[in-house]
Each structure stands twice: as C-alpha cells, then as structure tokens.
Length: 223
Length: 223
DNA sequence: TAGATTGTTAATCGATTAACAATC
DNA sequence: TAGATTGTTAATCGATTAACAATC
Image (cartoon, rainbow over all chains, first blue to last red; front, top):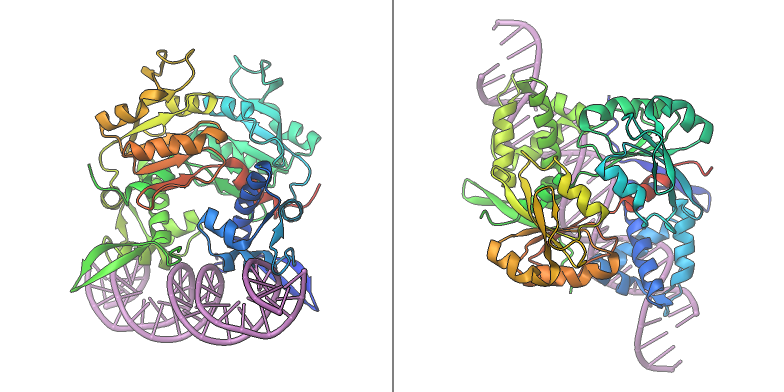
C-alpha cells in the first residue's frame, strides 16, 4: 500500500518534542538559499522576510514559518544577516561541503552537465562519468575520463558515491537506475522522461523540460 | 501587494457554475500524460486510476478528482481508454499541435536542448536559436541557423512565438527575459539559476539541477 | 523612544482522502 | 449476475496567512 501521508522528517529538538519538517518546506529552502547567495554576491548584508518574499513571490509569513522549523535566525526590527542565514541553510541542507556526484550518460545533455560550472560552490561536483558507447569510453570530458558503464556498480561503490545524475535515453533509464540503487546510490536526479521505480529509501528528483512547458501552455491562448 | 491566493483558472462550465482549476492540479496533468503515453507506447489500451496511481506514487482518488475538473473520461468497472485520455489531456494542456519555441543561448546546454529529440510528439519544436557570440552567429545547429541576439525582439515578433527557453548565463538572464517579454513571449522556461521578474501575465518555469540536488541532500546522511 | 521586524499562535483556507452510490 | 471502477461528496488533514506580543 502507498503511504499517502506527506513525507516528513524529524529535525529540531524543541523543548521535549520533536518537530517534523514537511517536504514542501524542504523544497523551498534551496530557493531561499539561491536568492540569499545572489543578494550576498551583489554585496547585500542584511535582508528581511518581507524583502526576500517580494523577490520570490512568497509571503513573508511563509518564509518566517519555514525558517522557524529549524531555529531562530533573525533579529526583531533588523531582519537576517545574509551570510549567517546562508551558512545555516547550507548546514540544514548538508551542502556546506561538496558532494561527489556520478553522471551516467555522456551524450549531449551529459556533456552539458559535465561542463556546467553552476555546481561549484553550491555543494556538488561531478567526479565520475559513465557511458556504454565504446567510442567515448576512455575519452575525457572536462578533465574526467568516461568510464565503462558495465563497471558502474563497483566504481560507484569504491568511490562511495551517494548521488547520481541520470542522462541516458528513456528506454535505458530504469535499468541504469536499478544498477545505481544496487551500487548504493541514495539520490538520483533523473533527466529521462520516465517515472523510475526505486526502493523508498532512494530519493528521486525529476527534470523534464516538457513537463514544465506543458504546465505553461495550459494557461496560454491557443494560437 | 502580492496575491497569495493560489493561482486558479476557470475551465469547465459545470451546470451553471464555473469551476476553477488549482495550479497544483494543472501541474500533475503533464505527469499523467507522460505516463499514459508510455503505457500506450508499450501497447496497453486501458488503465485505471488505481494502476496509474501506483505507477506514479499518487492515490487513485487524487487522479480521479484531478480529472473530474475537466469532464468524465472513464467508465465504471472498466477504467480509462488510454488513447482517449491522452487526447483529452493533450487538448486540455493545448499540446495537441506543436508550439514553436525560441531558444536563447546556444552554449553547451543550448546545444543539448537544440539536439534533444524529446520535444517531438509532446507539443514543442525549437524553431529559432539566438546567441550573442559573433563566432557562432550564422552557424547551424541541428539544421537551424543561430540568429543574432540583437535581433531577438523583431524576429520573435515576426514569427509570433509565444514560448522561449532561456539558457544564458545567470548575469544575462534578467535582461534577456525582459527582451522576451517585450517581444511578446508569454511563457519562459528558465535554465539560469536566478529568479526572474516579469509581468504577471508571463508564465515562468524554472529548471535548476542544484535546487533538486539540494532537496535530496537534506534527507541524506552526511558522509 | 519610535519604528521595524521577528517568531509564533490561531484562524483560515485549500488539498487530499475515504467512502460509496452509480453503473459498466 | 458479480466484480470492478468511476465520479463525487463530505470529512480529514495539512499548509498558509493574519495578527501580534516580544524585542532589537
């Protein structure tokens, strides 16, 4: 049977009770972190829930409530020290140091991901590339040698990787995902336009541009 | 002031009343469509809300309720004709025919998107490429000539494009987005890791892999 | 001090689910 | 017919917001 209760996780010891963190709150924290990092990059030192909310199209109350699950990070009358709040969110999200990430599938998209410099300073670094195409195995992309996908399980185990990006064709995605699970991967970022079946302990996030486009066309006038 | 009510849209005339469709429901329809298309591709002809829900990790009641906003598409005792339901969802999402899409920024990611064959048959086709790099302007990618980004507004207007993908560096994204709005674009799929400010009538969807990764690491054990 | 903003509470609002009559 | 499944209702559950005491 499915568990239709929201996924929640215990986080803060609060007096004697343990609070639970709704998934939807966790989902907003990276967005807060990204906006705060931008503010910091632009030289700003302090912000308020009101300002941050206006930037993100979120109510100030929601931001304060979300943060309150984890502690008290602001000052009445003043707001939040941006650098401090960034540090706290990095700690909460466990992105204070870098996670090493495996990338499976080095086609066009895989190449783009391997070259992407947007992972740096945000907690991730691709350190292993896999493909099953004999013509590319052994070649280097962005300084990393592409490994044989048949060695995926032992290589990932040996490196103790916990996160993988999946950029293989849709009809290969489930088989590779199962291998990733076997190798001990606990989080999969899936670019294949297909729903994966994995054990409950493994987190899957989906990126499919068409899903986003179709969410927009619903609201557009037919041409 | 912000409008913090959920975005809702009138859709179905239901007796005398007009129903409103919550954003969150609209967001699930493309996921249903993708799964149904997969089932159809695999030769299946009929499904039920129970089966579809189990595939997606969603309750059957939710699927039935979501669909009920738009009409009655199933048969008691039998379930849903997959092809028929696909057609209905395509109509509702307005992806029965192809939308022409502009792509701005033909770097690594832009190349991958220009080559991606996952848009075909799902309602979208990239028909215009723009970049500001003189070395690539005029060259072709996947049969499309890259146009000068300084011509973005008149070109998009002339072609009457309504949707654009934004794959430029973060520090250029807001400026380009403003141009897209000026050109009459009504939906932007933004790959730059930054929040865009656009008029309310313009829909923005965000794709930032790091956001997804950070949503996963929250739940992982620190290494 | 006066003004601003936090963290939190309680109320409101909306989404999800259980249950079932209808019916294929 | 018996079994299965829909579409819908009402109840439950959870998320958001308004409001405000606390306090910087």
